[in-house]
Image (cartoon, rainbow, N blue to C red):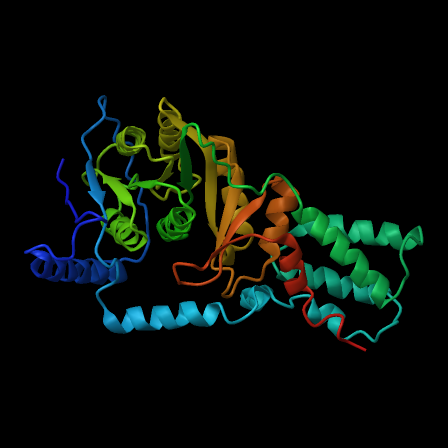
Length: 391
């Protein structure tokens, strides 16, 4: 297989060929950046399985150098965005999800009675926010029962208190911990449809785990999208971790297996495995993903997390995706990307309520540090922003 080999993370900056190498890297990365912008993270076509009988060779690329993108202006903007993101509370970074309950509740006078009109307006708000019919019905049926039994006061304060507790209980489901066993070669496998941000999520998580003292290897298992390997390589360089790659079109299972074997050989304790984006309703692609999952769990690998990456802006379609992937490969948790943008937030409630899957991570920006553990209490605070301020 063809491959590229980068500089080691510990390579001396005083090497005779350092300047020439950095110049070549800059030209190469500029070309990759152009290609990525021309074909953004559309990760998959119906490629079919490339089912090789033997595990192919892969390249081990220890990323190094400064790990920065070549576009100086874009780099500066990204760094400024990173700095700005840490100057504001995280609840301010939930985009449209912040305060989505303020419309039906924020205008109510403090102490106002809750009647059928208020509940109807609340129902409309929940449905428009992508909470979905089943979860909306569950919430409002519980509200009506509590009101009928006089378990809560039938006024604004009672309504808000009930909804806060009910929504929080929906979100406190499953185990939101990212599991890691120090005694084995851990594999975190990332799955999802086209364009949801798997590769970017892996890059951000690699940087975080390395900063926590773990030795990380990336597995470039998306071998079908032309720019996927190069994109992951850029993230590996930025995070200063190793990456194992294969040729375009190679069997993704073989690439991931070789990454696990390499990680075991060098004493790395964590493999973050990318996979090709695939439509959840394409049977042959889902069967291929099952194979990837089986191979990744062979010794010395131990799959301890299968993380479904969802674009939070997809709304109820994300729920359909989650069901199909969960049935195919046994999802352990969800990563929601783009929650800082136009996502209305209701999909978070639907996933937790209808599938019982914990939200483990959320993407709240473009910077390398803008991947956060999901905090249900913090999210509920954001949903109700501005509500209790009414009088």
